[in-house]
Length: 481
Image (cartoon, rainbow, N blue to C red; front, top):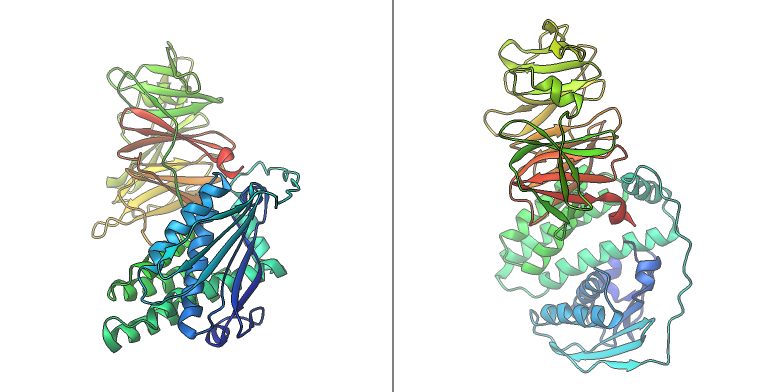
């Protein structure tokens, strides 16, 4: 969600840290957020202002504006509910500071215009004028790209072009972060040491903002991590929260806590999508079951997908079926073993070494294939996971991009020649990488307690997750709409 800032007016010290788009006036300070896109237009516009023009009130207004905007546009609800929720969050911020600041908050929405004023830490009664209705011109929906994860690539491309509205957004983002740090910096609670810590944190946050504008997510992540470590020692909850929120964005974390589920009446540890159909395999006798997630129906079938029929013949735990061959890990001998599967008589051919030159696979755990074979390894000291890539039996250069919490304790890796991404599954997290090793998304959920397996439809729009004895669905297409 991107919000255009039409007008931002602050006093002198803020201007020193911001960009030329910000203009200073002594009579009043005002921040205006104009809705951008159909979702935001359903809520309306925002403005936050005060007539006070002291340095401290400048920083506090900036902090309040950032808090109100984030909460107001956080989710789908009525404009009045969003307005009340935003004021509640802003009131909590005001309580942290001993300053009497009269703030006026306005919102022009499809339900009318709302106005409220504050003094100290209390907001008064909301005044509603239903005659002033905001007119919404619905914009035609953009044609969806078949690759639903292209949303992130499109965002990067927009930032690269640096349109004027995006420049304003980046400037406002920087001012919001600077305001958060300086508002606490100018209210010293723990003496000069606390001031020094926050000054260092401010420098690192500014560097992170510059890295974001340069599309350098690795540098931004590093600086935000350093800033977080500094403010954690200074006991400033508000700036800690803000930095953590920005870290989540840099690490592309998506939190999903209302996922549809399908509770199974049998035990399984395996899911598979074959020719568009979802299957599970009963743990006790390996018999296949056809699943209809939409209807929550299970059908027993005599013959399952060919991949499972081939894997029944192998004694190896880490195997993957591709084409007409079964591939297995042999960590002891630093090899990947290849065997032909003959469907006619349901047998496997002789074992052959697939790797042309042995590689260090002693700590290898899992493998997946899309024409190339990816093998996961676990660092014996740290537990950090990495992937090695091989093509036609030869090693290829491949590394996973660094993130704040590197993958560990993998239970499954998955891709195929029909997918654009590589999926790494942990017991409580799903990580999605491009086939160049760049992070595309991280999915977290309170519903993830013991993820065991993953199955993804061929267009990467639906992700099925086996969690204990239930199947959860992440609908990527719905999420992006």
